[in-house]
Image (cartoon, rainbow over all chains, first blue to last red; front, top):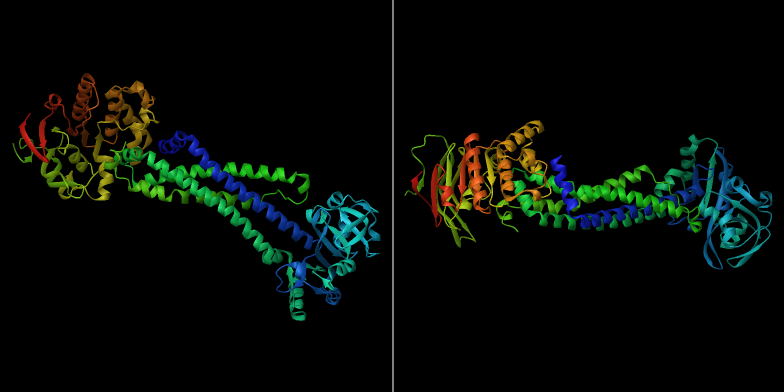
Length: 369
Length: 235
């Protein structure tokens, strides 16, 4: 109890300094939590586009980005005839632009595609999709920002398209996107195939055999199950690495703040540490006191950071412009990782101050005013 | 006058021993102790007098393991001090320190300050509290146990420091000018308290002091001058 009081006393004694250190860790934790969650949400959304009603994705091997992948149409057709395949949907991804909106995701899909079939149609008739290459269907957010309704003609890229439907999906990318018939998208993007082919198998247990079959039949293509894709797609890896790097930099800064605070803490209580030494405190006990103090700062900071991060995510989720793009559901494992990292930062920040405190010689420190 | 400060009339066990101890500072520029030989027996009260800078505090620090001699041997209860493992044991169980400045931790209460040595030593909490109340009663501090240090008078603070020094039942009490910052009346009270607790607890008291009037009330009076010990007479 007294040991704990010795730790907390010093935090109370220098309230402003403690608060600044706690704030440093809190904002680092909040930044890491927010950035990682948003990016993981984005990755999840992108994955869900690919895995909509499918188990396996087929795309061109060794491409750095799916936008550069090209699966020839003939191969899509062949794959769809394999006995293990329930249906194969070629999807062509592209980025198009419109006035005031430089980036709009475009999906070139067939009428039977799950994205078209399973979405909630707010307006228009699904059966009309694919009848004409001038026709497009808009996600509800895209319809909002393009001020389009069914029957409108919207300028997209170098063409003008007739809106035949507006649909609502839970996925922000899809809801802010444009759906074109595959043939129209191929023409628009000057491609003869698709970016990916999403595969619905008759049985999930056929996945391994299907992948082996693809590898054997089409060496230039690769088939990955959805979870494999999420873990191996290089863009996702880059995004994840960026998120952790941003958060990591924040924590390093927070750690430096703690180190600074703890050094000051040791300097201002040199005499007190000497008193404890004279009264029998060991090096371990002195170090434990310093680490205890920094751990308290880190723990308070981590808690405050979680609150700030969750609040920020909740707020972002409810910003109309970001509707559907922010997934605010924080994974417990991420919270655990962030808390552990914050505590480790606290400990790392106290390493030098603790070593310094352990070297304090009571006989000299007692003369210290 | 003798260079080996021992009292041959006392037959108690030797608890403090310095043999030909030299100590310098500033890379040898300042010599503080010059071949000091000293012995103190169990239960003795010894006053160490001398001008400032004569080496009184240094000798106390060496006995307490707070500093190391350049040469010579320092032993407490027969065990050489300058080994770390012994040092912790020494500070936790065998030696209590009282300084001129009380050296209490201001944010803690009187009781909490006194309990610090028991925290260091990992003493059972109930036993520690029992000891605290025993010492508080003996030093007249029972009614002040929950007071913060800032609210205590100078005398009470020094009595608290004495309590703290005795918490772990040390056999030796090293007091470095414990009355140096107190007024005359309070000095006499605190000094008498030191002598009383030393007698009651059976501890040896080695006390550096400038106050010769008080010093002569100890069993022995030892004079230090220019890093050497002289024992003019046995009291």
